[in-house]
Image (cartoon, rainbow over all chains, first blue to last red; front, side):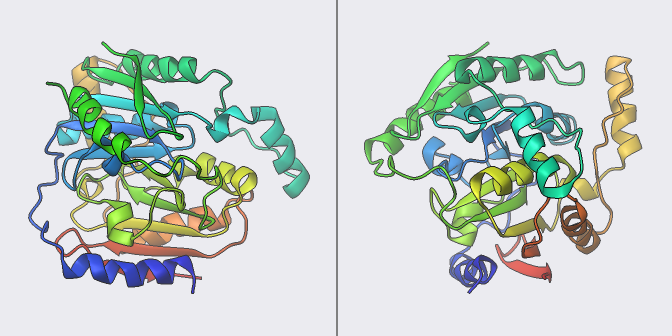
Length: 163
Length: 163
């Protein structure tokens, strides 16, 4: 059974007890969280929110660059007014350099890419950098942004920056 | 109390019962799911997966363009070999056109942006389009990709395309 088939089966259980069909489109907590795609992090469980509460944007590293489109839509069209950025310990983004991955891709496909993979070497700094990228974007509202590091060994979030 | 402070408080409960500190970095189910950032969708609960299972990429619409960087990292560096794409009913991306949002931003800031906001007018087609964008990217592996629409009224996923 493929994972897609497993998910279809699991989803039937979710549907059988589903009671949240009347939630509004705009997030109830008026917030957006930006989190790494890492499999070990369950944002809803670890932060204690439920369906309908917050926009959840996730990508490799929890990086701001890929997220700006979503953040602007979230704020301008769906009314969110707080952002939380979460990177984490033992992140895959700490394990390679942009040129390493570009070399692998060139070797595998014979093609070069101008995609930036946005790895980082300093976890605290990466959180600060992404908070700053969001804050300094002219299309993003001047609202509270808090940065955290999630510890995959303990499940704990530790604040890096806030304003 | 800000949402960040609420999350810090909620997180203490999660940490107090946390037993998953030994999970490996690569996803156990060797898969990546791409889902809209919509607040009403809890991917882990609705699909039945746990911490450590899958990479979760989320953005406005669950669009492929923003996700390619993450997908390539996921496959090349962390071994995932299946992709599931999930868009959903009542999506905010169905409610505007790119030029509408650009006009709002110009009015609010006096600045123009070349960012593409990637709204869509046909939900089935948007899933097919994003599956195709992923499949046709030369740096993405030839692996199973399945597309679904999540129904926010029922919690049910319905398959749009598979290969």
